[in-house]
Length: 131
Ligand code: C2G
Image (cartoon, rainbow, N blue to C red; front, side, top):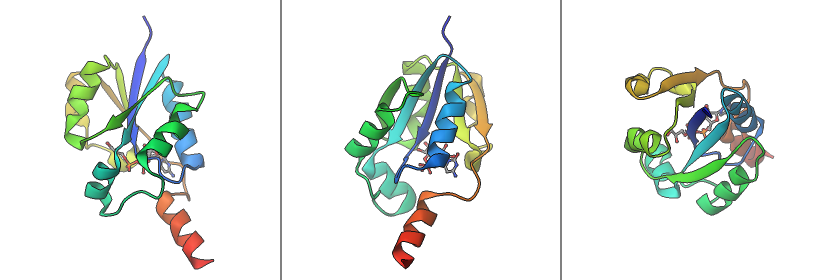
């Protein structure tokens, strides 16, 4: 049976760290589903709207060869619901979320992958501003 992986993120100002985690997530199974945070959810989490709006972020993520299915993540609290509705076997998160989703281990395997060092959307924005 195909192993389904699910992961979540904003993926704003798409960069190599995003590609790497999606590539590694996909390599753990056969089918990768990505929940892309809505603009509203991002505002709630980070107190600012993303640079790229959710339609553009969805288009970017959908176009990747590692990604099989994409949906909008409307709330951080709906993870259990999303995992069950997509029948996901493994939840992958970056290790900046280490420990935060261990409780979901009751419905699927939970794996935290190390972040790619020295790159982040926030840093790219800061560098661009300073130029
Ligand atoms: N990432 C990474 N290396 C980086 C930067 C990001 O591996 N240098 C990973 C993050 O760990 C995450 C994914 O790329 O798994 C998307 O990163 P963000 O857009 O920053 O995700 P975030 O806003 O933390 O949203 O429900 C959870 C949230 O939606 C996660």
